[in-house]
Amino acid sequence: MDSLISTVVVILIAVTSFSIVLTAGVPLIEKSLDSIKFSEAEKIFSYIDNCINEVANEGPGASRILKFRTDAKNFRVSSQDNSIEVEMGTAAKLMDYYSRSIHGNIIQVSGNDMSCTNTTSAIAMGNSYISVILRHTPQASPMAVIDTSGIIANITEKRSGRSIAFADSSIAIDENEETSSGVGYTELVSQGRSLCRAHAFVNSTVKYDVYYTLYAGADFLDIEIRNVV
Image (cartoon, rainbow, N blue to C red; front, side, top):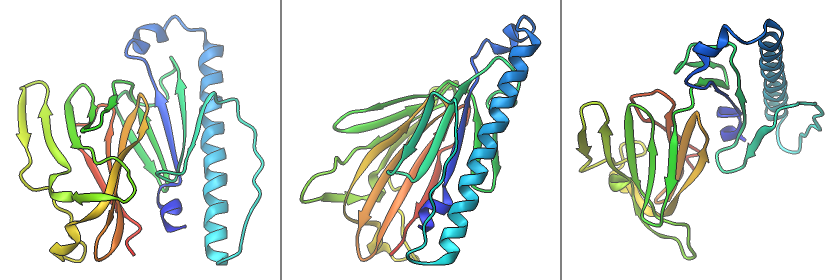
C-alpha cells in the first residue's frame, strides 16, 4: 500500500511540438474545453488519492469502491509501478512545454519527445536532450542474478554527443553493499510520449524495487527506491 500511496497518479499532458504555432488558429471554445478536461482529470486523481490515503489510514481490511466518469481515451492503470496515467493532446497552453509540476502524489508532465525501446539485452529511453541505456535482465523462473552496479550502462548527452559509461551504479540499502546485488529482473513499465519508466526488482538480503524514470525534455534520470522489506 505504501508504494501505491507514493506514486498514486501521473497525469501526462502530451503537447505537440507545433502547438504554439497552432494555438492562435484554434477556436477559443476548443481551448476552453481542453482546459475543462484537464481540470476534471486533476479532480478525479485528487479524489482517488484522497480515498487511497483514507483506506491506508484505516488499516488492513479497509476498502473503497470508487465511481467516476472520464472521457479520457488514454487512461492507463499500471500494477507494475502502481500508477494511474492519462495522456491529453491539446493546443491550449495548459503548461509550459517541457515542464513538470508535482502536487503531492500528482505529477503533471508536458512534452512528447520521448522514445522507449525494449530488447532482450537493453532498455533504451531517450528524449531531445539525453538517451539512457539500461541493461535488461528479463523476468524468468528461477530469477536471474542481478547487480545494480551494472544496470545503468551509459547516458549520452545528445547535443554534444558525449557519452558517460557507468562503471558502478550500485544501490546500497542502509549503506550495506551486500544489498546491491541478488536475484531479480528489470522491465519497461511505462512507455508514453511524456515519460519512460523502467523497474528493477532486487531480492538480496532485503527486497526492494528501483524505478528509473526519464521525463520529456529532462536532462537527468530520476531514480526512486520503494518497498524495502
